[in-house]
Image 1 (tube, one colour):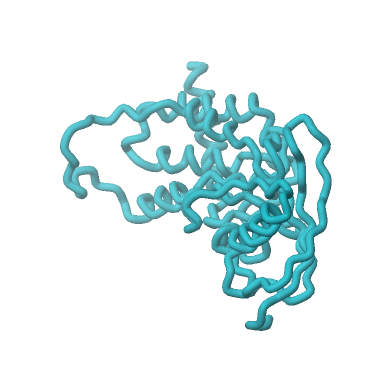
Image 2 (image 1 turned 45 degrees about the vertical axis):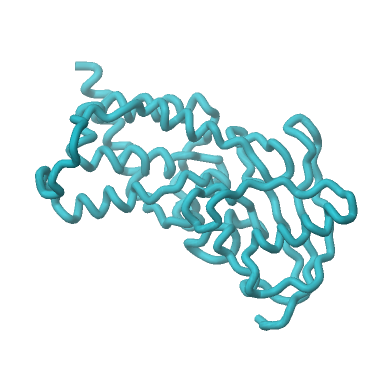
Length: 254
């Protein structure tokens, strides 16, 4: 990898709307700095397209700090690109070489319809979260940190599950477009803590039902979801969610 500016061939998915047929368009881009982020490189291309009175490439982004999960692209066949545990916005062009051809596509899943170009509608995730409902905890002043004793191992596991940013890379990477890793992370972060116990049974049943209703596929335990997750959410959460779901369905029959 050189520190000099690079010349790249970009094959970018272009689609004018959700009901239109899309295709890969080829662009030659010169003078790309290795210190640019991947999104800055797209900005550079878009600036040129606007100058040439062409339609710029639509893509999602917000914080550009690897926190929000908006920057969802499949880069050379891998959600978020070649660097492990990194979102697209935090991926730098030094991971590529002069003369490379880079294929850039949107996250693909029936539950994530393409809005335009690289931008997809991931509101199915929002509806799964909404199906989980609320946590009935007492409001008021902030309680003392040690008021509710929680073993460190449990607290750490809950925190790791809560690190999920809901980007959808797990869905895009899975051959079945399964959302099990995302849903299990959201179930686990509350199932592990005492504050989440009151609604635990209804939460897991409602979230799993909504996940199926939204058209996500089934999990076949290939663990690609964990491999492409920028926050490295563990598939152990899927096993935990399955146990929570089984327990909840048994309780509902009593």
